[in-house]
Length: 353
Ligand code: MRU
Image (tube, rainbow, N blue to C red):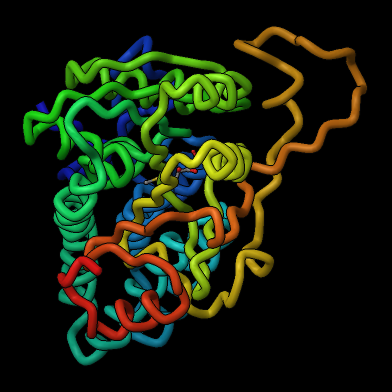
């Protein structure tokens, strides 16, 4: 059965609790927009597209609760809510993309009465969810061409159904190859410190009966050097105009290792993850998270009390290490700057090159 990590229900925004997986499949209902903000901050919902969808639904939830009239007051209150969402997680551009889209929807419908505006905002948030699932399916169709029957694939973090509206980006490509009947195997990086690979990707692959092997992050180089990996595929939190990408910490090391071992390194991401305002990876803001993610493991301290910790949640992979970026509008290869610009202007739509 398809995983529905986020849905809009009568009672509110329903999220699968990603903190509880893989031990429990539990759902939380957010009835107030502040609860969605808390869910984004504490990683109940995570993954770039999923964060964007949750924010859009949270804004719609906020809109419903705003009772102020006249319209200017309503608009101001909604912009304040948008500002609160924009302060949650800085790296995934999908968050800011979704907030902008909700603001645009508000502006375009200001002529309506407040009741209709609220309804339209809910419809927009639901549309963002449905469009994301459709985009993932297209990524899967374009990306599965990169996978041959018998391939062994390495992936990092979780770029699956859980990280999106459903289906997944990097894991969507893997799913699509599996659905096509290709016999594949996946090496899953555990992804320290939050273990999205061990907890979430392993869970998704097991559910689909896709053969998978869990490794710790530090084993990836050895596995590659022994000829056990045919390609690497990961998701992205932001793609710069020049094709540099930010993704989960550890992605850069994998890309360098893949390059050293002549293994193709693919990135799968929807167009909503591309940020043309950012020229290169150096300009992507990198989130730093609390040190307790590093000093503790499963609730138990593993480091001496008081040790200084550096905990960047993402790193940047320069475009020179990337074989191709698989988007919902086709596949872009070097020179990335031109390919991305063309794709974003719609010229390259669906050509796959
Ligand atoms: O900190 P997270 O778990 O939100 O980080 C997620 C990732 O880095 C994913 O690889 C990325 O968002 C792509 S998800 C389709």
